[in-house]
Image (tube, rainbow, N blue to C red; front, side, top):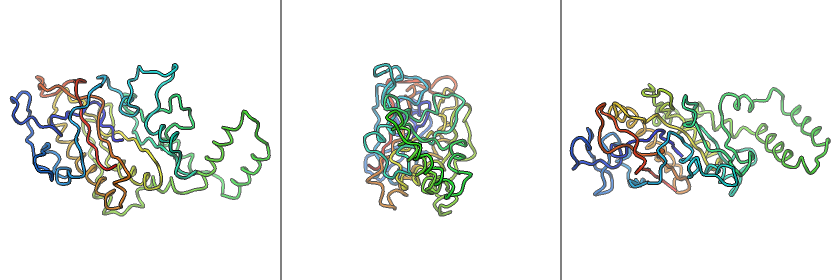
Length: 319
């Protein structure tokens, strides 16, 4: 789940209004895709060339209009509650319904970068499902925790000692957590998946880095390498990966922002879909690219587009 935070302008991306007046149409022209009769914005030539693997939804509604990833990661509004608790994110639902593919690999991972505006870095809480289904977030602290300061024999000896203590009815969940924790620490699957230095340099170059990071402000960087990490995580058995990409809050200089963010998105998303396809994984992996709301049809005085929750967009591939 690829969260383009703060509302990407779909009329400059997947639904160019070429017949509209200039104050609505904007600066971009449509380009043909690999599907006859379907055109998208000029900033996305790589995606256009393989559009037979994509679907653009140009009529997403029900958005709240607030700067928050919650709706995209859960499908619900922030104010919606169940018995006083929040709704779980899609990764947590996958964890609950499907479970992990391997005890040493978490079912869901949040690759969301830290943001100045905190609600943009939401990767989906477990909500009413409980903490055992919350996303694993491989930030600095968690990565440090994946590297124990003990060798395997000492780690296993401590596990044996812990088991001798015994488990009462109030400790059953804790014992499950413990077993999962030891499995993660004794396996290299997760650590290896997060280490893109082990990836083929040609594949890394195909994704690019997304640098320099422009128009970031209080949002996420255009970090192309997170998409490569996401593919490696799914390949290792993670069921759901959520990541943030860029800051699309284009109240001003909308077209400059789309040229920057759009060209980088074009590179990494096309690389991801092509990569999944070459590995025979695309039919089993759904890629979702969207944001929390759309942007105004009419361009403002600062050459920007403002919030427009009445309609939004989504780009899908695979699945």
